[in-house]
Image 1 (cartoon, rainbow, N blue to C red):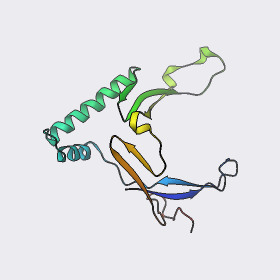
Image 2: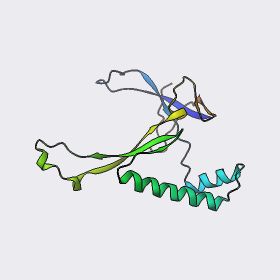
Image 3: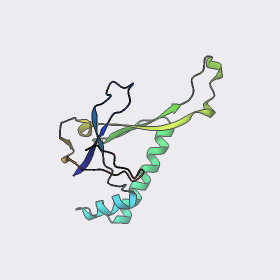
Length: 147
């Protein structure tokens, strides 16, 4: 079950000032090894090592393709692409691509992009949300919610 806490918007310039918004409580990061182990634990005929190799190769290929200018779509998950980020210039001749920062972007696609209140269905997987009490961020020791 995914967990959330409520955080009050204290930005006086925001249209959402004084409103509470849900924030996800991060449960941790699952890396390629974790994904491989979980996939192998399912009804897969592939070993953990084979799955790890496929995921690693897929990651490299996706980066190569996106950095070559293609958008890569993983059906039911997301569309990935790169975006150049740079300071604006008044004269187009001043544009210098060597100063661009390259940002990898993603947008949910297919079933993963459906919106619902309380639950979200993604390929047969249902996410349900549970509010946690006083949430303490791992980065900042103080409690993030109000009583």
